[in-house]
Amino acid sequence: MKRIGFAIGILLGSAAGLLLAPRRGRETRARVRETGREVADLALGPFRTLAEEAAARLQQQTPLQDLIGPCAPTL
Image (cartoon, rainbow, N blue to C red; front, side, top):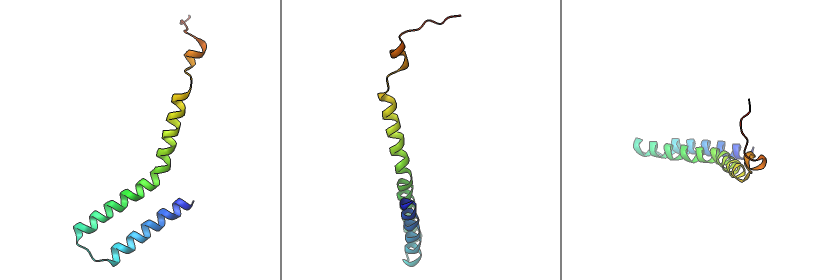
């Protein structure tokens, strides 16, 4: 929950900064893009970590075929 509050704070702070600091349109759009990337990285970071951890655990598992040996199909 703290991360969500942090992300909301970043968004609100960025919006206030953009509204209160006059810049050219090109500069403003560049800052908006950069802020969007930072927020996306902050939001997706835990999911990327989880996916990497899950992939590592799956690679560490012993394949079922190694446990039971080769099997011939039966009819």
